[in-house]
Length: 321
Length: 241
Image (cartoon, each protein chain N blue to C red):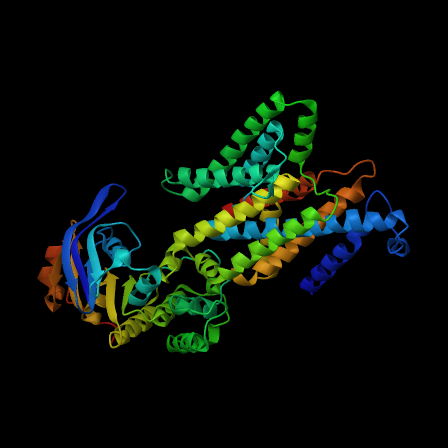
């Protein structure tokens, strides 16, 4: 019954979302090509809905992947500093004025990706020095890296021009307000690729969700598979974050909710997590447009307002175990 | 046939096992006090930890084997099931042991599924196959692990303290299953439960102070045991039969 209500709610969010925003749209005007509502709906709202949905899917699925591979409920690309790495990378690109294409990818996105990948490499390198209980220490390393990146970002702010700083400030708060179909299509392809690669490795993932040792004993090359999956999802998150800015907590909240609703093995939760992640971010993004009429609230603020208390709840409920 | 040459294992810079040479050609019980290095020895055999020296199974060096090839040769059953995602069902858990045989990208074969069901039935968990592994008792989890190792169809199965966390009833059940498996697999049993070791009637090795001593049935002589453990023993009753 609960599941039914949640699915209905998801569908309603998807259907209603494009109609909510600064301008009220009526169904009758949308298909009238001469009406402004037509271009608002098809060039602004619809691409944005698609973008939010697939962005949410990427964030949620990456969260599920990180939690499973590290076997720790608090691990996500966001809590490990991989998102912050992407922000710093994008910040450097903005400061250097790089906006051309690099290897066919937008310059800022390319730098964002580099930032997240470098963070992953740094984490793997630093993790080798950790002895016991290294899961918690790794989390602390991620948080330390995030703080360090924030101070580097402050340096960029300090050195930046007003125009650059405005761009950077908006970026760090996270926003899904895009115009046109390029980004939504690009991000949906990224989301499909991410889900495809996880699907290909779903049996390995299921084994890794038992334990590293258990997976190894049953024939999984655990180091290789873990690295491939972490690197690829960091790549996807890096690309996303370099477009949208950091959107926290989706990867933390959604996989837990899905696991609560569907107490199934991880390989059966991949798609559900993607859809719920998409729905959750779309809901948050709709809120940003519904709450204020003056200007939109940055999406990162809404997800953090929901995710922050949830994070605290998770830490407390874990300590009770 | 397992050949071990100059095996040396360290744990946090402390030498646990040193220069061990041993051939294992039949069922074996590994006995020793807590912390003597029994589990370290077993984990080295499975290639789970780094070690010095050389271990080969059927003349193949285990460190140069691919993971799936190693899984077909040797499996290891820990004393306690440790599982992060406890939502996995008993059926799914056991089926995963067919990973080393999987060729199809999309699913396990019908044969894999049949073997899984057969082994779940063999250990007596058929009525729990849709239950999650996390919801099982320690005894049932041990049986689930045994079903999993059977389904993996490795030539050698290592049992690490299989009865350590079990009540007498489950201990008896697990012990008799392990003994029955001697007919079809090579069994390596790690235990400090002398009753269990005596019941299994394998060749024995005693691990102490970084080295191993070989014994046959004479290990269970009261005087020999007193010499090894330093405490008095009364005659070991074979309690599992």
